[in-house]
Image: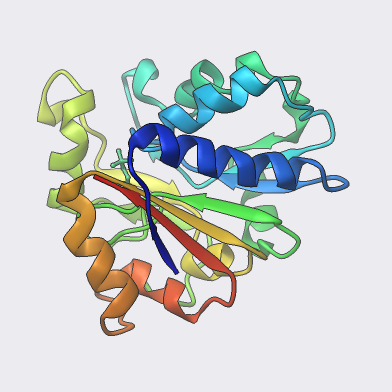
Length: 219
Ligand code: PGA
């Protein structure tokens, strides 16, 4: 289930191949992540000039009460991907738009969910202790996540303390899940999540119970 790749470039190209295949399906639906891990993937997808005209995308999460627009996940997605592809903006959804929460809960019919993993084993903003039955909801961020994400903000006090996240149940409804892991600092948590006990203390461990998960790791 865990594929070790030689470089970040290879990770980005390999996952881009998977996305390219999904985009060839009729009316493809994808769940997309933010963070540093998928930046190379999004660059590669932009370079490939693929047809996104019938695609629908759902983002995993978004901060609440964020005062720094450049750090919003909506901003990140438009900057890194959506502005450069032919996606229909009516088909782009973020969980922070409360009107779309119910839609985001079904997850059913989603062809591909791309994920990163947090240092504490979170996926999206499902922090340790999140119920495996969780759906889209508002959550408090842990101190560890706030500290991890402070690298993107002027000071740690600027990091929002809450977010809206797609739930674990919603994520698990996807037909296929690809977890991208980049950097040795994530190696241990990846191994614990993918080979250790399946427990709500390590939210990513739920992935072991999905029948179509691929994990791609590079140092
Ligand atoms: P990263 O974040 O890609 O910036 O490491 C992943 C995550 O916290 O889910």
